[in-house]
Length: 145
Length: 133
Image 1: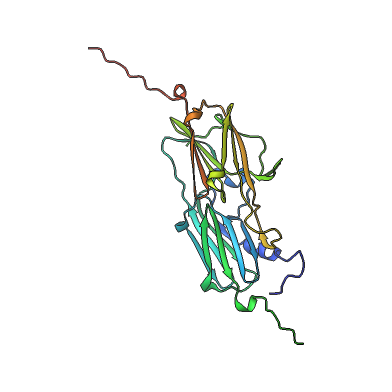
Image 2 (image 1 turned 45 degrees about the vertical axis):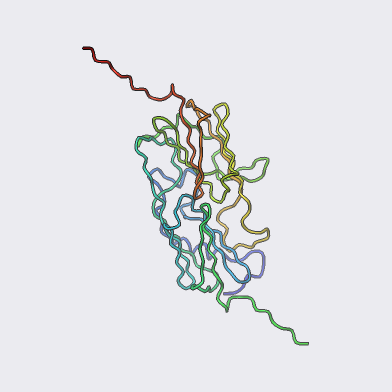
């Protein structure tokens, strides 16, 4: 993949790629409309440094054991579920937090070393560290004198 | 499941992000459910520190403010940026009589659980019927 060369790089293509996701992370009351969220869940931030790509998602109330992170080739999948937790003897005044299964697939901009991907959850934030494949890392070239 | 809007009103604006004096804040998603003895609120506050979440209840107005520190250094260039990171802030007007002394909250996995016990007189009361001999 061509390296981006300016402040505006082509993630439009990436965004379109992600529309092929599957999700039913929305409750029976039309979760999508209530908080202005899109039907894409979870929203992702993806950034990089020289050696790694990073992907982050906010997954409050989701147990680490209920989240699966898969890397196949250049495709990152985050899937899982948030339990509904119907409470007996309760009537809901407001229900904005989605429940159910979700699955999000995103095409990564560079090759990664799938064997060494790490994921951790902290206070409802999932952070995935994806080491770039050797070929995708910047190389320092010695200047001959 | 019945739904009503009468007891807790969210205010004032509906929108994902709002500007306040402290800069950009985000409006957290909430579930509010009512049980016979209390209201329970579940508030999505990912990425906070539990001891920094400020919950205030005064004159029937509940305010939740949760500071969130930036997680990436300034100048980070994103391939994808689908959400912003910043403080969470939201207010509610609660018409139910709440016993503020007994309010309590806990924070786990990025979710604040807030218990708002009703004052005794607001609770349904079962009146025992004495049976004459």
